[in-house]
Image 1: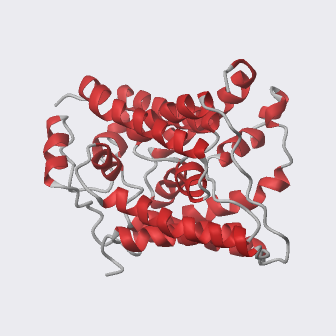
Image 2: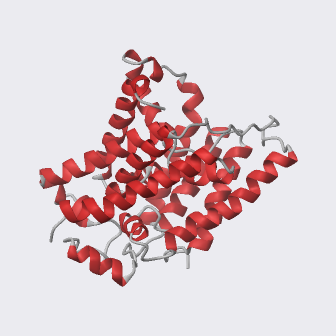
Length: 137
Length: 185
């Protein structure tokens, strides 16, 4: 039953990102050119609603749907890994025109070339795992 | 309405809703950790301990991935009679100048993502390098757009703000400095 719920949440996400064109290479390029408000509107309004809902979850001590208490982990404190990793990701995001979520969505939409991007991404994650202990974090 | 491009003020709040539902299911909204799960499935645990994780604990997120594949299929094949993305005229002009004639007429540039484009080795290299940067970068930064820009910033995390600034530094360098070097009309 839970499995069906996760699949449904993913399906909902896929439809939203496809239909809002957040999964379009063109929209990502346009965003980095500051030519349209569209992507900033999506991220900004997601944040406006997200901040309220997350603060509500934290303050109300609401339980999960399955009765467990909810713990939202804080991100580890650091600077280097976020700025360097973030910049590398940004380079790839703009070139591929897709972040990890849209990669799966575009595969479902039938853009087979995105599987090359996915292969590269899995390879990148693997190389990170190998180099992890040698990189500054 | 449903069949046209969805406006930002519908999409943004719905994305926040997806994040909230996942939190209320005791999980989190983060798509890039699945890349590590694929490494584990492919046997990467034999090489590095980092990839030795219990796959059962990652199963829920793979189901979200499966769902998003289905969502992409539905979005493209049932809900989008016209896939052309109406980007601004300024953007179309800039892309035409870089040799992207498909700007304004397609969902993804045919110059990079059509099957004909794959006959060019340079396109394979671009897509592989782009993917590699996405995979390496997100894991180094510990998250991508969903984990940092949406979830982390919603939880007012300073690390996520640093990561998102990084995303923009990288994206701006790519589009404004690297694109004119690698794409010519």
